[in-house]
Length: 77
Ligand SMILES: [Zn+2]
Image (cartoon, rainbow, N blue to C red; front, side, top):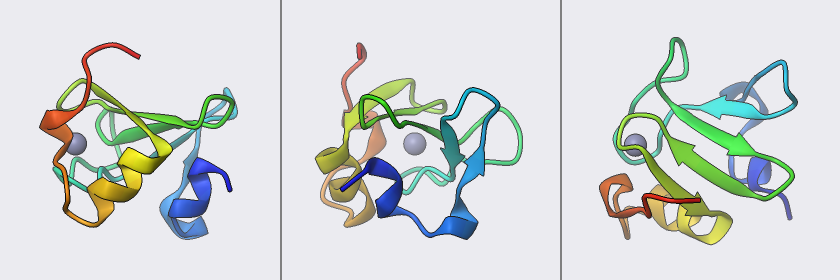
């Protein structure tokens, strides 16, 4: 399983570097401008631009379920 599998294809906005931007499932920061959540496909990690926090793939799943919020993420990768 890859981190992008947690999202529908239409939710993924591809960046030029091969990574993807989605709306943050926790804070709702959207993927249209400089906000949202970046999905790093090589490491299966995610970064919320709004709360400036990092997540593992399992933690992104927990964000989607409302178990944790993005402000609870770690500050370093
Ligand atoms: Zn967020």
